[in-house]
Image (cartoon, rainbow, N blue to C red; front, side, top):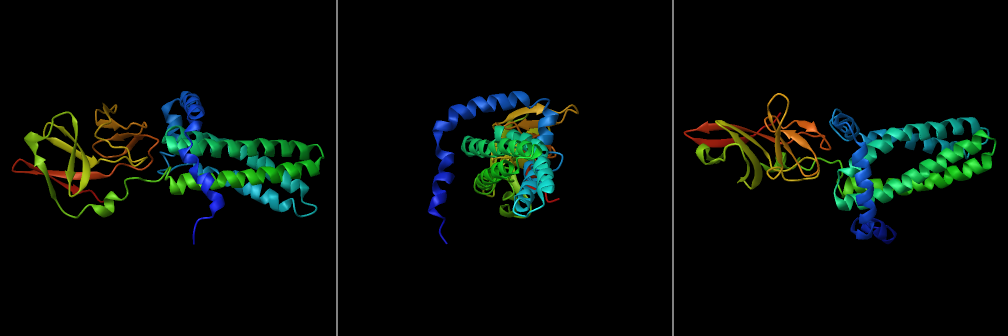
Length: 290
């Protein structure tokens, strides 16, 4: 079945460069507010191991769906008003998490995301006005505002689906390495030929690998970030407080090189790690499978 033609202008939002000035200005504001870094990590969902925003939207979306149903049933005005209020209050953390993810995504995702945010936050404003109208006895106005907002939530939800499923915001962009890389040990190169203290990229079995040698220790990760697929070998090297090496990608994700674990988001899944061994001066690698 072919995609509905009415949807094509919506999915083409990612190519609308005219949105870029707005995107750049809003991104600066959002990044300036996302401090300290630990707060941003929570909003991305680093402690949870996957993005937090999709889970947080369940409360406002569910509440507003319930309110829309009850608005069609006589005698349920009070219950509908409670659900509208629950959605308005519950949307706050979802909005914050959404902006955090948006600020660290790619330009094409940000173009769609800015329209997604405008639709949803206009809906939030209308729902707040709907609650006020209901609270003061203007049920008809409250319902009209609620159904208008519900339509915007549906439109915003469609764009959210496009962001998540077609543009893969929040998805693990490195997962395919686990299925592509062949089993067993594979030669990487002579230990003495690996640059000491500097990151490098090597291709092994058709897969790009991030390699960092520190003396006799060689650490290897898949050369692809789990966040948006950025390469790791051209990232910025650093250290944790424990002295272990880290690498920071262009979009701000920080991975511990030895373990692949996420130090800072927006990445929520750890980098794909490889085991290493040296035999006769030759370093070999094997995909680490937990």
